[in-house]
Length: 229
Image (cartoon, rainbow, N blue to C red; front, side, top):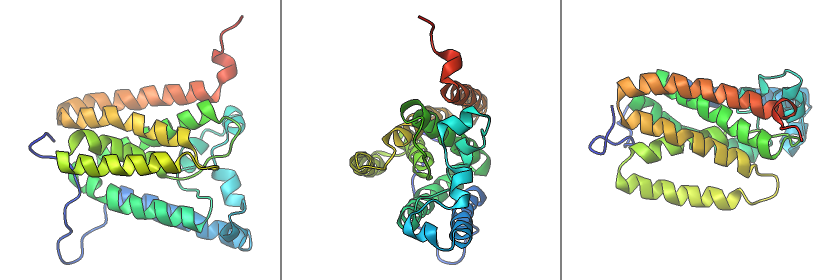
């Protein structure tokens, strides 16, 4: 469905109202709603970047996933560590995710989002098993990875600049470089599948999803797969 001649990249929005792409809208609305709920339940503590009750139930944390709380590998996408974290992630989610979803369709976009969100969680657990991790940025970088493979040369240059900026940010304390890297790496093969056409994507995407579920399970249970001396 995409090729070098028909790249996937953001295009200027036409005048007038357009229907929001539903998956991207759900990510943004869900993230904002959870943050507002957490701020209410924590009596404003979340606004000061403290850990509210919703954050504690949704954040990725390896030991709790290990105990069976597998929902955290996805719910961490909707949780954010403060208003600034939420604001910038949602800005990028809209500017990058909405054009991509409109270009490829909501079904394909949902599959890409699931794979890259879990890919980001996998890397976060592999490298920072006991560190709470939240945010949509790993999944968003996965969108960028898919778009990098399928877009034209000019937009690729823009993405490379953005990747470089994110790489610098990822070196800051409290930022999950592993989650960012995992999302990006899991997005690249999905971009290859998109570029190869609808038939290849329909075969490759479910396989990649199954592989991602498997590696999430492995990352969540290092004790079961660690080699014996």
